[in-house]
Image (tube, rainbow, N blue to C red):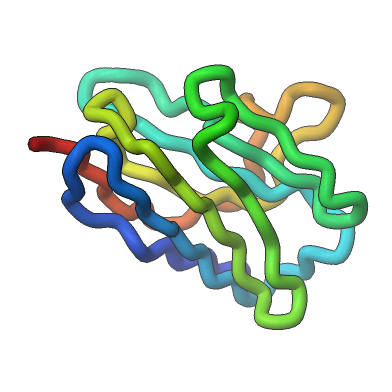
Amino acid sequence: EVRLVASGGGTVQPGASLRLSCGISGYTMKASCMAWFRQASGSEREGVAAIYSASSRSFYADSVKGRYTISLDKVENIMYLQMNSLTPEDTAMYYCAADCAYDGRWHRSDLVGYWGQGTQVTVSS
C-alpha cells in the first residue's frame, strides 16, 4: 500500500520560512515524478513544485520560483519543500504527491497517481 504523510505546516508571519516533509512508504522514488501541490480555500488545487527523482531536475510554479526548493532524501524516502519569504498568498493546504506526470504536465493534479493527506500552511500577521 502506498502511503504519503505530509507534515511541517503551521502558522507563520509574512517573511518567515517553513519546511514541509512528506514521508513515503510502499512506493519507490527510484525513477518517478514527485511533487507538491496546494489548494487555497475556494480555489483549485495547483502544482507548486516537482522533481524527477532519477535526474533531480526540478520545476516550480512562477509564483514560488526563487522562494521554494523541492528535494528528495532517497535513503529515508522523504520529500521536502523548503519555503522561504512566505506571504499571505501562500496560505493553503499543501499536499505531497507521487507519480506525477512527465513532459511538462507535472502541475496537472488530475494526472497524479498518489496523494498525501495535506498539511495546512497559514501566513498571517
